[in-house]
Length: 199
Image 1 (cartoon, one colour):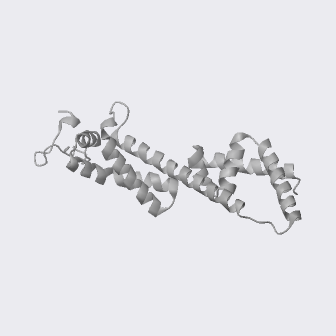
Image 2 (tube, rainbow, N blue to C red; image 1 turned 30 degrees about the vertical axis):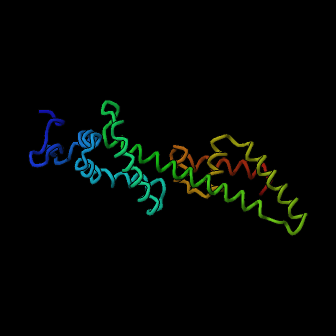
Image 3 (cartoon, rainbow, N blue to C red; image 1 turned 120 degrees about the horizontal axis):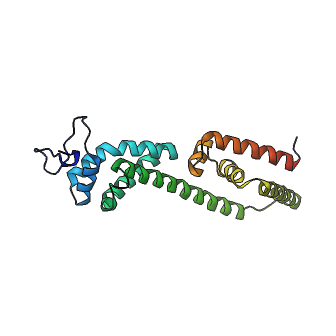
């Protein structure tokens, strides 16, 4: 008898835990796809915590992580018919959705903070024309030096220093190792220091 064919006689439609005590996530997801709420509840109990862990690593904020986890599990319920066991396991499918939603949330936050920054700059009234000119010249020099960096260095520095992300968050956003991000930022900052003539 295959693992997929095992059912619990006391719970019609629910996957019985095989010998290792773990429920069959693929079967639970297929049952949820046809509206089996009990199967989805069991799937939720099994996969919500791992999904939260993936999301928390990206977002860092527990409250936002909980909110995104709820959105993910709702999406799993609504889109369960799209699950294809030939392409991945149910757990992989759910955790992929979780990671994508977390990254989407980060991108949304970045866009919102950029809008707020633009609005804040629009409201600034300079007290002194000289200060305005000097700041403008400094910004132009920094932009020019940023433009001389490689794309990966510029992206990493922009996310870390202009958008306030930690190196780990930058690593998750650009899908690179933490060591690679640290190296890119360090090398980029050294090149900018030389470009700006700072000792």
